[in-house]
Length: 418
Image (cartoon, rainbow, N blue to C red; front, side, top):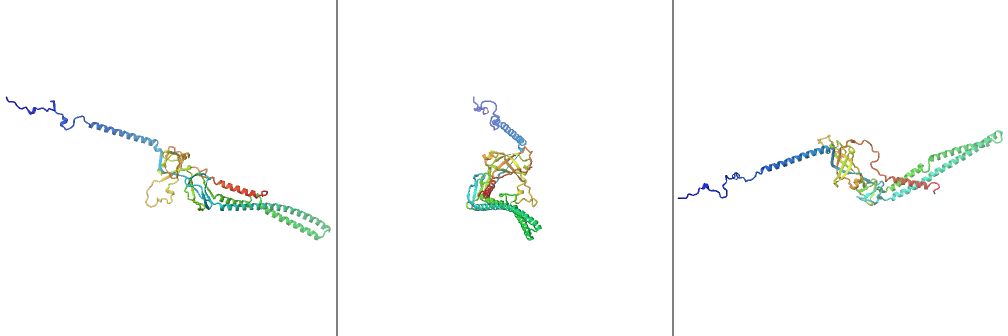
């Protein structure tokens, strides 16, 4: 019996078990396992939904902030520190012999800053004192002449009465023929002479009395004129010493020792940094709800957000910067482009002790934020100032000392003081 070859169609793959049909995924060329496309789409959609919620919440938060707080604020970084710059200028000409302070030094009111050569002024003071003393003595002579004229009038009146009595007696005797007509004539001449002498004496008395009437030596016009000259010379002498008008810091010193300076020459400046303010330039569209007295929060570039100053609106400018410029814009000529203008708003600090802890310098940049909740205040000042905005009293004592010196000279040249 012949053997038959095995049927090739019935051969089995030794790597496979004899189970059903091959894997369809393998036939399709795809790897076996779970489908990964569905989880990716689900994760992406979740992230988009979260992002949308965050955006919506952000918009809601911004709207809440704007309507509850944001729309009640106006801010600008176009703001700068400003203050008084007190110039030290001589009132008399002179040569500088010493300088008492330099740039950056702190000085107090009344402290000597510049000393001019006082020699010429001292000579003028001595001359004015001598003139006043001489005038006082002359006026005393006027009072004495009045007393002398008054005594002379009294003497002339006695002489007149005597001459009148003599004439009357001789007139009676002449009626009886006891005396001659010639003797009576002599008596008449004596009476007329006595009358003329009294009249002349009375006129002299009145003339002298007019010169001193209703006055004392100190208030006499001649003495007052001489005292004014001494006062002027004394002030010139005192003003040869230039003092600081206010407390502050020295800046812009330009004077040098030996320099001949004239009246009005700027020698240096004193800046009181404890009394600075802020000039903030807001757009005109930002002023709609601004009022005087509204609170302001200030932050400076030098300290950043770590330091916050508190202030208030003191005034709203009465014009734009361009309106007061040297060459104001002529908007009525040529082509015109509208530009939003800025108005200066002055801000004062509530507590000046803030400036002691964190000082500011003139010209520094700051950022201001104005709270607009309270709109009861006016936009323009309704009252005139009742006291000086800025003042000094260091010069008052100079005149008082001059008056003391005048009183000494007058007293020294009065009667009983020689």
